[in-house]
Image (cartoon, rainbow over all chains, first blue to last red):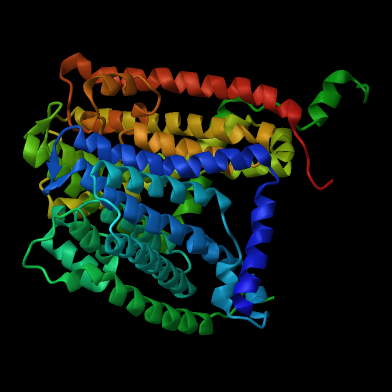
Length: 265
Length: 288
């Protein structure tokens, strides 16, 4: 509870500071929102050439897109600024984080909160809502619960991968881009039906780096494309994936921080 | 005896007024470019990570492209192999033209450090252009080629059949870098008016990425949209060089995309100079 209050106090300060350069902030929100909008344009442009992709219609892919992008945008909002961790490591300013009597991960996560990213969350949710209604999927309690659960587990999966990737830069410093390929690349990957990828890539993103568990399996069920022979439990693949990643992320982060040596005087 | 206060000599004493000879400027351009090359070559781990990233994205984009092309056979005259090849040429181009996130000049304008740059006896735009070409040379050699080479193990990629394609492609890539530089320079100059330039940069990045063909080749766009997009300054950064590689045009027609690139080089660099001239009147030096 104390941690939550600290988090809120720190991020609200960060949020206020972002409103200082007013026009810079307006462009920032527009830019961040537009990135998501243009990803949607990419999907629609591809679908202007075909009616179905791997058995999915444009609207069905939009539901998948909406869920995956919302989860990504939420994770980006919570931990996206870990992208800048290498800068602190190189400069040695991570020292100041270790001097606080709090979890270093909590402090890093609370060190920023990019208000602009709220725009992308809103946009992705809007895409999900519009595609959902136009498909006439209704609001059955169980379905809504599954969507909510999927958004939570999806966010956790993205955020945990972000933390693990950022933690590895304690050893390598310069490899944040590799992490980005899993986070930003994950956004691209999860926005399309898994069936379009090679079998080896599908296996990799389900069993090794479980990005494939972010949205595909539950959404496949929700839009009625799940094969009848599939166990209903597959829809919940995101739960063990998220839980496992959180454990791994905590472990890797602690191991990584122990290797930190500062940068001398 | 020479008068110490002679206007001629006092002008020479002021370094901001000193003029370098023609050869001197060229040598300086080269020195700046070489330093930039070395600067980016020093990040080895970043290079490896970057190549891996481009390769991963290339695999994902290829899958989407193939999913469409398999059904259609061809899209706007591009066969499946052309479209996949284009994905990989563009993965190499992305970092070479540095389409993403350059705010170095903007930060210097915001902090006022640009005042120091403007005192130097070199043209600001020219200095940064040399710097950017040096950076691009490094990125083209390493990050530009590696994803394509790796991809040729996974896919059958299209290679040029005409010898002339190679020099034309190199010219087209250089022009793509200059157009991209000109656009990035312009967005950074916005810092003279709005201070924090990161939002503008992010906004423009998103637009350029989508409209240059980088996320989806312009071939996939509806015909009318495609025709309009080919006339905007974004296609010259991605679509044009990759079309040259794919030998889309024949004979003298092959010079058409390069001519279009040249036109945009003149426009973006010219507008950049005009905007800069207006902007420097607004320099604010923060923190005293």
